[in-house]
Structure formats: C-alpha cells, structure tokens
Image (cartoon, rainbow, N blue to C red; front, side, top):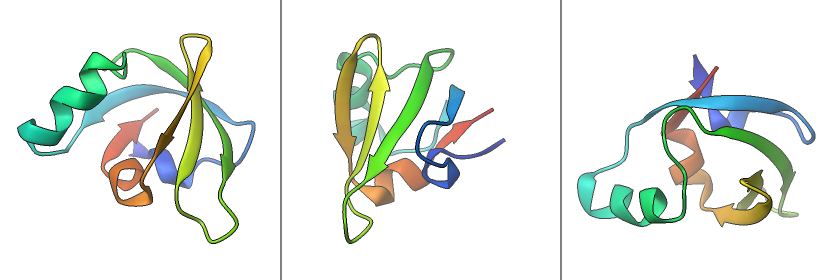
Length: 73
C-alpha cells in the first residue's frame, strides 16, 4: 500500500484504508470515497496542493494532507 498522494497523474488505484480522524472521514465517506473504491489521480495544483482525483464519474479535490493519509493499492 502507498499514499494516494504518491500516484502520478493518470495513474489508477483502489482505496484500501483511510487514516483520517472520524470527524473528517465522514465528509469523505459521504462523497463516496470508501475502501474498495477505484480512483484516478487527475492532477496536482501548481503548488502541489490540492490534489484532484476522479472517482465514481466525478472529480474531487482533496488537500494533500488528506491524500497523504488515504492508502491505496
């Protein structure tokens, strides 16, 4: 496993684990970012934060700090 933030643009992976505190995790779960969900890293913002991913046919921007704590395989 490795962090979501380690993917390169266009690379795909599957969410394995979300190591984010429960009060922040709920927001991600509501948006469909669940273990087992396929994701694709679309791009990094010019300064590397936020990170844009694609999941379930829509795009989602995450803080790099959040992407660092989402484990994928």
